Image (cartoon, rainbow, N blue to C red; front, top):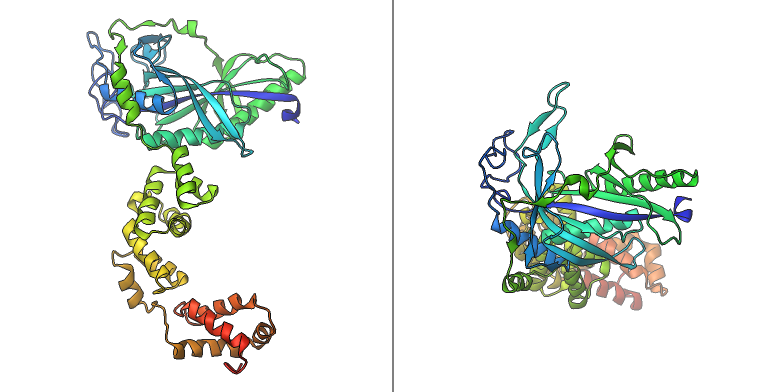
Length: 486
């Protein structure tokens, strides 16, 4: 009902922690964890006389991300002071960028929830520092402050209000996360706060041109939470408008336990922060040559790699999507495909057995005990008729717990394919004896039963029978009634 009358308009603000060793303006380490307030210095703590010095590596990573999002990286940008008071902000202001950001005017293309292409504009990408962390559950009735995170380098990616469905917002965010991981500019770990999302949501009548009053939703710790929070806020604003009321511009917090939003404060405008250029930091100047070098160094991005996998290996879109969901998975697959020479077989195994193993073990593919070379060797054995596909899965399971080569494991477990006719005929005879009706129907012309009977022989043999020779023997039996006696 809500979507039939009132259209939701969504813009996102995504904060991405840059993968640097040290903070944005000092030499304190950025590694997650550590005892509270141990990774701080006079700059982090805003002690008198302490001056910030910009981290050059943070600039490189920020520019790389902006270029990958199709933005124009400006040769001159300016750091500003964003003034507001909060206990975890020692200086009383945050170093950010305002009217002269690092980059503007980008775009991201993705397939929406209905499978159709979508384009979301990127209004700006700017650099800023993170605040500290307020901890409300450490001491009863008190709030503790940990400043280890204060000064950590971030980029804020601000989209245009181009999204019209909560599910599209989730798809966009997953692609954005995948992109920054491919670039290696961030680990984008939401649980550790390396990627945080705020959603700006407004509602208007279907067909209207003017935007409605927007609210900003914070405190969402997963993409599914973002989707759910947008749906809840869409419904809330729609009810207000349907009843003739007015939506207030405010900041809302997502309450995951109640599956609802609650007011936090009135939403600030830019003038509320009293921005002005930071006198301690000169303008950031980048040469055209420096920007071009960063653009030329961009890796193959997820959309490009997915299209190449479809074209080069003849894969369906669904498999290519799974294989490119992670840069590490994509590289693992390609190593298997190149070593084995059959991209489709490699894809089937990586999408199937490998993904299942990763889920069971709970590890990244870089920690999978089976190397791409070992998996390719196993697939070579299947293609060469040395081992059946069923037996290969048993060998793969063993490879997860041992470093031994697949051939050694197959030999020790007695899983190498049996090819001699005498043994194969014994297994076929055994199946014929237990399946007389199927044999009669096969001889009567029901060729579809051939596969069923081959499967029964494979089961009887424990996966050791050569399925191609078994199929040939059964096919011969179907035309030569004297060949076997059920």
